[in-house]
Length: 463
Image (cartoon, one colour):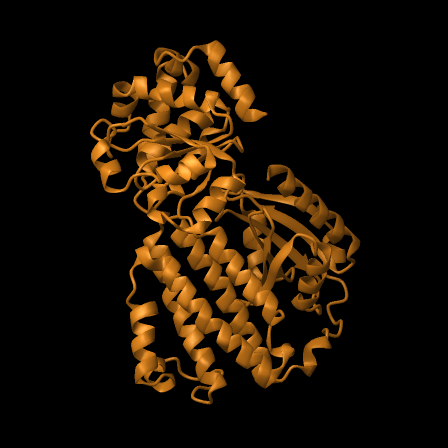
């Protein structure tokens, strides 16, 4: 994945240098930009000369990355800045902000300490031809078709953002996106049915657009459903949205859509699958160890079996207490079918206090040794999980990442992706405890996992 990121940046930069009206290209490094797994983003700023249409950038990017492209959208913005949001196979989500040199966002980005220059023309070149005639290729779109196209792009963008928030157990983030997503989609239905106007009021849309049976269905399955039902919510939403997209094509033609209907359907189904298994993702620094919440939450779901097979999971390390396991055991039949070995290690939650992770490091050394031995001896890849995939799993993942040389700031960033109630001070406390005792190698040696064996594990996981 990291090689794929580097290749993407190189190709984007090489293309940008060849386009005369692109004045500069910059990468904005967020705390999570070096991480792997669903929900991670790469951000870029593309500065282009005045008089050019952002749609031309969208079209060019679609061609440039056509082999890897799942979906690319020109996302509406409340400011003058546009953004192309891209989803490529086996890559983080990519956001390319598009602006003219005089716009405020350019100054903000360039003044940020985390912005790196990929290429930049001289100031004189970047401001030339300001009186150039704007691109008129899209003028054939009617005003209503153009509005609908922007609205569909916005809905698709929010659909993915809501899925990411759910995958990362971000309750507040999910609802802050989910409800505007519903409002925009109801408004879209109202426009199609002649019950709302493009730039009209968004108040009381439910009563204005839907009849009583539709309102009851909408309220039950989309409005009042809980966070734990987000996957079911997403499926209900997709069924509704796909019918609207087909209506758009029938009434306004393809010019009113940002992509063909089949591509929109494929994108939504792709997002649904990628973010379906909440908190399932790789440990940083290796492609051979993964972390998750308890897989029992998805018992019987074919996506779980497919995920196990796709990631060659042969060893499962269950950190839960016996009483937790009794309520929701891992699927022994599925494990037998796939040739998996499940290690029940009882990384005691009483020792791993939510306010003091170091108790687990002190009181569960035998369990820590057994975990690392299981990873070393696994005939395939390893999955580590507890109940929610946050505290206990986060601590063991941090030990693996430290052993593999992952920088501490990336360890902290990965830990914070596990849910809204994860606290930075908890993982920082853990890292300080390890460093104060001579580092991760010394700590693991105190657990009975010798440095010679540690080197074998590093060679295996890094290979």
